[in-house]
Image (cartoon, one colour):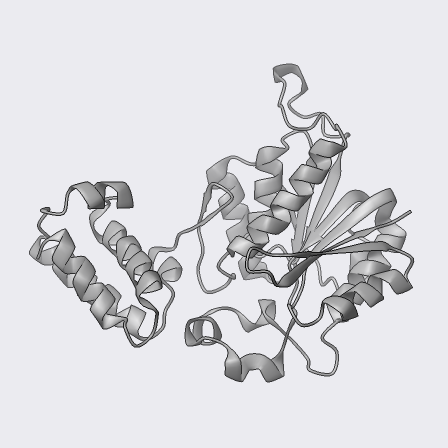
Length: 298
């Protein structure tokens, strides 16, 4: 079996689960996982032949993919804002839409002219210019990306899952990016007291009502952590109310909250923040869906 035949085998095995474009992308990642060849080399070296061991490994990968297991969990690898992250079923797989949220934060900070983007040798630990908190940090993707781009900012991440925090800390260590990850049940006001006062809060919290499970893809529903995905049907805005209230107490004046939202709940989330006196902006993602909100405290 050569690379071209391997790609065809993977795509054919997934035709009832994914569309051809996504199946082709998964096939490329699966082949990289088995052979170590990145996509650009796969295009050139189509005549590379699999060993018997590699072919056996690929067949096992195909079996897992056919059970709707995400390729990122099989590889224990995902990419986010230029970072290669370790992931497993204890954390959500980072999404491109969340990269857009991070990009919004970074562009706004640049517009403010804050000197946080260049690490100077004599000021490696000077992080008083900007303080950022990532709530429901999961793999740490948001916090780590922000700290990577803004090394002179001080960044924290919090989560209720010890397993997720272990992964976030592992990613920080392997990437040599310093973020303080803390165990906090953010819905418990008593535990919020352990968190710092900051200039920016960022969050991709659980926001999918449980009633929506029937419409979700099997690779997400069967394998990604429900704790990080779902909220009760009777209170889908619980995290946004908690964030708005937390910001009133622990966000500096002119501070900002950036959140990812359910595409059908934009107006409802906007009202949560406006009720607490924030100025709110809703932004659409690359698919034209309302998926992000910025709430500014004055």
